[in-house]
Image 1: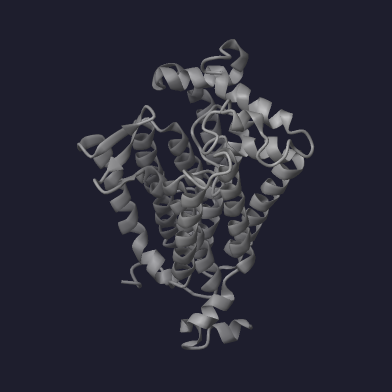
Image 2: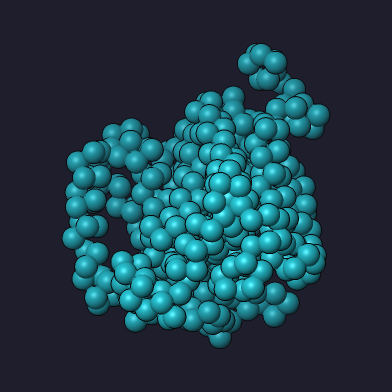
Length: 385
């Protein structure tokens, strides 16, 4: 279908036309990754659908329908929702700290107890940040994005949730928020001088932050990452067991359901943070490489979608969401291989977890919306109001 056909009045409003414009390769890859996750959760549970695999599939199926529905929403509505959504999510993060609704689990006060359910606002904050930054950059010039006092605004939009989430303490989510915001500023055209200065400042601040800014258990994780064998039955246990699982799989793995580290529960958090180690143990290098290839394909397709958008908002939003997804994959992969400290970042769609899956699926709804409405032109300033 040509560009002129797609922009013909009323043509884009047909549901059938919009469904045809969805990138089904991307949808298929997401289904494959989630399916592998369900298969691994079934294996980890000893060949049972409960307690993880069935819920994982039900959540994904429901969110898949929601993703496809949201992908047909015009970009102007995503644009309008950007700032209100960011503000709402920031309020929810503040509620964790300053109201009795804050709930502590796993040593971190990062849950909001709503009575009927518990949610992690920090997970959704990542999507809200991508949208808010995309809207800000859409309404500002290339010079403002490169170097201007106005950059204090997006820096503050990144810094406030980063500090609040790090204080919970949820270092993994804070790291994703900070890095995603930094990548978006880079994609928007930030000056190389500022990037170099920021990198130098980050390197300089790491040692004092580790010594004075981290909780004891976080500091121990960093020190253990440098030398996990120093405490093999304590803080180094997770990394050591993960490495054993990764290495023992060899080329083709031990076989489905035959991973000793996961089946005998030596591997900690085998259904969430370390599920990729289980994939490597049971299916070896070939299996883990195949899963990573699926992730890489998703990232490349999403970047292509971002490049095709006619609106700056669409380009920045799709690029930022792709960066967010890629950071999840890179940090979790590095973590399970002992190349990064254990910070509690799941492998997207592979790991068990509702909040994380919901954020990823809503994020790809945005990417697909950019694809479907790639020829849409969004006016600058307040024209949409």
